[in-house]
Length: 123
Image (tube, rainbow, N blue to C red):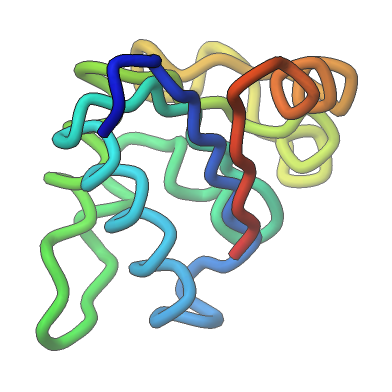
């Protein structure tokens, strides 16, 4: 990576319903963290369930890194956000989520995505 700190936003709408897309999103986010990028992972749609304790451990995909390890890597050095509307539709509250995961809406996503030196990917 260049000397300029770039930010990568990874938004995943896929969960267990589309396991390869889901695993790709988490893998890209964790790899970007390891490369030194500033990473913001957004959990939306069916990926919202991974904001709950233990849910990532239930995810299995052959030849993929364990989802809990990927999530932990992003949480340790980046930001993980659960979509406000997605959380509400699933009756997930701030008290329910893994410590360190925030709940925020479209305005925060747009602010992040439109900031300088930012790349957004959607899975």
